[in-house]
Length: 322
Ligand code: ADE
Ligand code: ZN
Image (tube, rainbow, N blue to C red; front, side, top):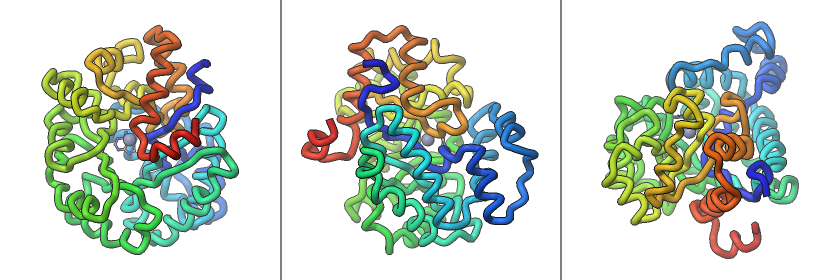
């Protein structure tokens, strides 16, 4: 079965990164917000990035149109509808609470909006979901702890915590206290590391934060001992090929380190990261990497199998999904 449609789980998608230009303008209009872009095409023309920070600047700017529960619900509905056309059966979805709280959007609005969509995702789209709240590492560990407090009334709908935003200069170890609290509350733990940052950040995510998966982690390829550790412990990497190229972490898909990671025995998964910005959804990433690296059908099946193995679904749920 081609990579586009093969049944798969998506484990690394920022819901705010699924906000398409059309919905940016629709929300802006509904909420009476004047945008610094002339139209949809003008916005789309700006989707050329030098690095992670240049992307984040636009990402945070565009999401300022999200003000009401309906905005969050429509964004999530659009993602799920699109993902369902690309073989996604299960999605573990990130959101960035601080990016909204800091603009004055209350946690209740964010969570109510997201969960109104997620609650009926299985029936409407055939996609089961998990929700992962990410801390913005460039806001620091104290702000992360305050966000953790704000999440407390909503822990019944939060499955895990993560760590994202600008990476270099913000090592994971500083976030040990908030990850310790999340672990004690029984939540799953993941973190972005080794996207732009060095292998040392991946070690810290594993040893200090105790994460179950590493988001991106592509720079692990520079450290043979780290590759052995990831492989031995079967700690998955959620790799995002289109993102890595668009943010210039790798020069092109042909030179993506995915084959080296697989050869080292690492449980690699393919994901979209911020599909509205990077030129494709998760199925498109499968097709792109399959073509660029000339992967055969067995390799694609292996990547799809990894996506379910690396997910947080129970064995029983997995059987029902496949
Ligand atoms: N937030 C959204 N996309 C991200 C990425 N690729 N890296 C870090 N933080 C992000
Ligand atoms: Zn990401």
